[in-house]
Image (cartoon, rainbow over all chains, first blue to last red; front, top):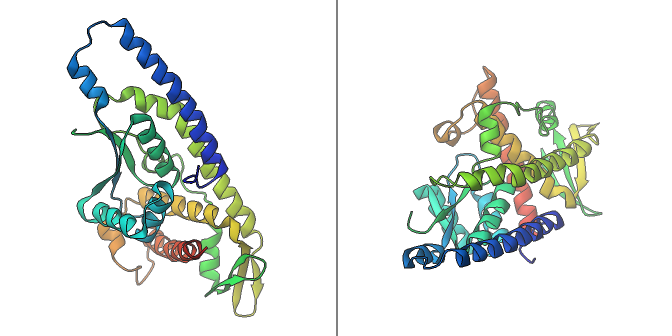
Length: 123
Length: 162
């Protein structure tokens, strides 16, 4: 909740968390229905998901840095490092972890009008 | 043009030339929301990966309506604040509650992104300083984007200090 810029976002997070929780349960139930699921499938599920921020010519550097600090709680230095990576290399992986959480972060970044996507690690 | 933090937790702008006052009144729109390029920029896809159609559909159904509401709310806050424009000696003046800075930042960003998408302005166009002369709508859009950037920069500094 500390990371939320507004109550509205917190509420959205909460609803999506709840949805994520039920999706998670459904996913677990599905896994149980398919006996002998392969190790490869399990490895794929365990693979982290990346939150990727893409360069755009309009958003200001100071604004992008501010958004990174707010959404991810980064220090100024870390936020600036990621911002410069976006600017110079065209993209930066700003967070990795569980898919549901990654989607929440992308939603928050979109609410600040940053170009962000979620992608599976290694794709 | 002068920026200031005023008593009563308000932010103020003074000595705004008429041209810039006119451009400020355009911050909440109307921008061409029906333009496909604008729509795609304000509501980008959450994934570029193949095989993520379900996520993209889910996003359209559940996330985009929330983003629409959030963006509209920011524009409405700014629109209401802009009704406080007044003419003074030396230009126009405006002040608004510091608590509205988030809405202003968001509305300014919507405006800048919409203008860039609508006029197909890329990195090369925008890396130049503002146009020396405004000869057409595209030049005006560039000028507007640079002016709104200056307002954003000021607001980010204010929020950074808070």
